[in-house]
Amino acid sequence: MSSHEPTQAIDLMAAFSRRNRKHAAAPEEASAPADGLQEAGDSDSLMRQVKRLKSADLRPTTTRISVLAVLEQAAPDCLHANQILRELARLSGTETVGSTYRALKDLQECGLLIRSWNERGKTLYRLRPEGHGPGGNTLVCRCGRRLVAVEDSVLQETLTRLATREGFAVQDRPVFTISTVCAGCEHHAHSR
Image (cartoon, rainbow, N blue to C red; front, side, top):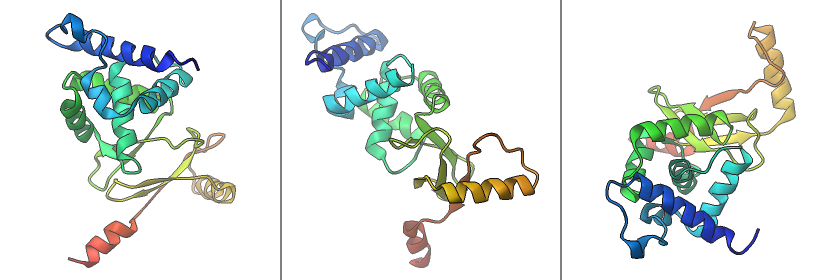
């Protein structure tokens, strides 16, 4: 990676951001990074997001980079789309509802995000942990805020046998989500 790549990535993100703004940036602002993107993380964080997108063969758009940065800041917690939209509005105010949902869909489909549901049926998103492939199993708290990646071949084999025996269509490597209650929620329930 050359020493110019971080600057080029920030300039690229600033260009996307300026294009989305209603008013064009003043000439002296042209080389400055987009405010929201700068707040969303340092240049190392931004470069990580660009690298993640490129490794997934996705074009690094401002919205995709911003969504990844917001989810990285929230980790290990999960966020629902409205929380992501509120944070994006606070950071830059340039992303639209449609582009954010499109980015979430693209990021989830290419395996960069894990999608789960809380006990009320609300969809939650979290960055897929490094080294946890798209076919990985997860433990998720019923509140939806906590999600843990599980890599255990014995558990995988046991769950696959059980699913097959119970008549579920099992692909080459099925993905299982186990819903439970995290210690924080358990503590909160007992303190009421």
